[in-house]
Length: 336
Image (cartoon, rainbow, N blue to C red; front, side):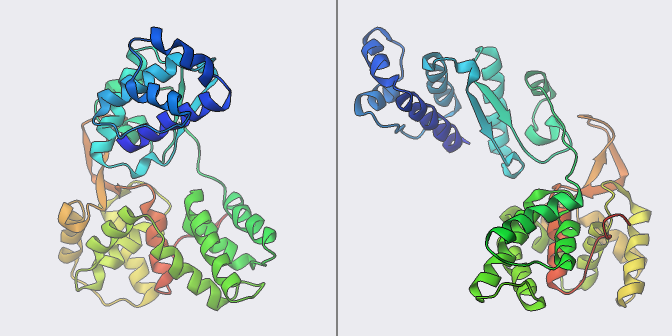
């Protein structure tokens, strides 16, 4: 997070230099007694280079100086995207920064973007942080939107993608553009490398394999930790949960979905007690903490222990992608 704060500072410095304000600001440096030495050095060198920040307080002081210097700062927007991949330590730093932005009356506008059910889940830490943020919730994209992401890119490079593969992208993506970008790019690379103009079963399969390798590291680690257990039913249980579009699933419903896939795909029968024990284990760090019990309500400490969900909102798509690599199609066709 400190590196991100540094990049924000360098971006703001570049903006100042680009709009030609650096010279006039440099003349004021002598009277700007509290101005950060790092900012002074940047103006003198006419180069937007800041040293690494030692801690969050240092980052806030530098960014507050830049906030004071930028003309029309209220019209300047800083966007922080993909916050769902932050570690817990990073979230704490970000939460402290958000509180200081509010308390110190920053004029800059910050847009925080990430995949979560609410601000509390995205930023974490204390509930009071939500008071500093205006939450804007967006619905998952429609299947056609995900298909259009891929088909538009394919058209730009002269590649044809059969509808069956576009549908698979939509199903695996489950409303999240991340997987449309990941799968679309992976498929198109394979087609271009093959010097072809059409996605075939071979290039689709290679594209899926490339997409799995290029998936978010956090998802890959959690999935592999959960399913690499010497018995396939661990993997199959996770597949059963990912096969449904429902976010929160009761334990008995999860087992029912498992048995439906077991019957359809011919899996070996497993004792019910082993399945229930595995479901309990999936919440533990030793099993990737791939699932969690469902909170009772927004930001509450109460837990609905009979209901489970994936700990990461993107995990459902990742699991579907992993199953696709193994030749198993999960998820329902759009509109079904």
